[in-house]
Image 1 (cartoon, one colour):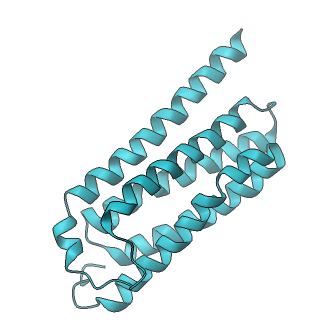
Image 2 (image 1 turned 60 degrees about the vertical axis):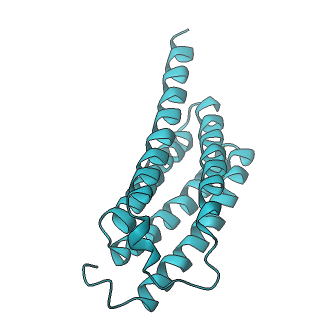
Length: 165
């Protein structure tokens, strides 16, 4: 019974971390869309209304992935995967406040590079625990790769507006 309680608490923590990450991103973004309009972006930049649904789906897949890892047999690799999941959640939660909130696209680009690496490490670790869990984060890694490109284009195309980093 003790392990069921721990598993339930871990699943609740995953849900809470996912919701907190989504909330932080949405809050920072909503408050700074005016500033964002002035940035020069890639011609591949999707319309603003695409981001919410895409991120919602990706957060859901990411949480499902972590939930599968939590329910796997306890092991050192399972613990590593969960630690990496937490790392990528923290880095994800930092990106929007850096980019939108602090108006620091260069710092956000550094953050997204670390995020990309942590997602890749999580994917590899999760694969050793549960292959379906690792497959669930492949779209997330793809989208973050695209987001890194878009972030890089803002840094490259709007140098005058980015004096704060």
